[in-house]
Image 1 (cartoon, protein in one colour):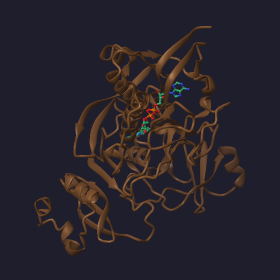
Image 2: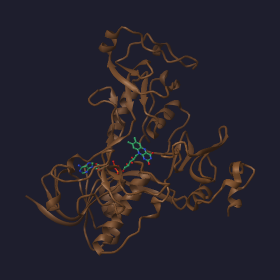
Image 3: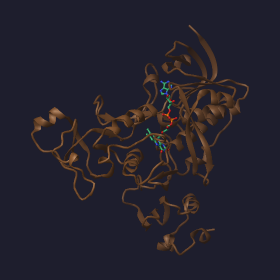
Image 4: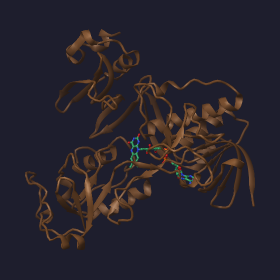
Length: 436
Ligand code: FAD
């Protein structure tokens, strides 16, 4: 039985784990930093650009682990999944039978797609390069696909298919031909305010003896092969009573944290979303174990303008901050919560437009106690501001609005803007000058 003693152990070669390992490697150049990962490649943030105080833009690249080891000679990447964690002994056991006794451990094993049903071959989730390839091969033969969800992934799939945009913000589908058969790729139909009631296989549908819904016409490209008389391998029944046939279903309905290998025999506190609860020092409830990225649930009392969202930005921020906290605890130093957790800030691209989300951009948790202000120039820009008690608490900026820095400052300093009323979004007023 091979056992190694390691001062710093990080699990997960995604953005959170790699950022954490990199930060530890810089701070403790005389120590070896061990990074255990299940995947053959690691993910690194490249082309990092600070857009404003809290907004950061970067690309995510899959790299060979040797690249990381070359950049940081004190990082050792071990490509073997964790099989077991014995927290009482501070010991991690990998699938290849090795044992690692750690001083401090950071768990960054990410999350996987939450599928609307498990075990149905016609229901796909997209998580990594392999699942994206499976999706691509299904799509190549598809006449009609149902996408469930209206988050970033769903929007990207639909926008890619609609040919309105390409090479969108995230790069997971770069280099892939995400095109279905000709007729499908021109017709998008959206059903709002409904959920999937059940999924029926072809035989189950036939037994129902009811017609399936035709995709509403009005789109010139509606093709005869996707009419209501076509036969489909799978059918989706919605809570609004409609029933659609399709070739397969993409479940883009959130994620489930990968906590399973770490739980047996250990007393982790688990959040409502299934993540490992962490405090404001990224510490789990188990001594000397920290967590960062998609696997964790932020269980501290957050700033009024921040919420956890499982995104690259936060995986990177949490990975970096977890390393700083691990170091501070090791050195017996105090550490303040990092400034990036003051304001939720995310930049991405959809339909080839720059999209910036700030604070409570969707009035999350505000109930009816808020007002919205809008400015929209068709094809150019869309600005939505969320106001509460005369203060700006959130914003969505689409297009080249140049408003991000000013709005970020207005949110951070919580200035009373009641006196400005609608002027706040008046395109004829140079707002940047106004509040300088
Ligand atoms: P991950 O990147 O999931 O990494 C987890 C790592 O842990 C992997 O290396 C894995 O191999 C390893 N691991 C898992 N289990 C074990 C184990 N038992 N032992 C050892 N290692 C293990 N976010 C954005 O901000 N912008 C986007 O545009 C965007 N697009 C997305 C598109 C898709 C299709 C998906 C699925 C997600 C997208 N996200 C996006 C979300 C983003 O990918 C995640 O928030 C981010 O990757 C989380 O990083 P992480 O390091 O916490 O986890």
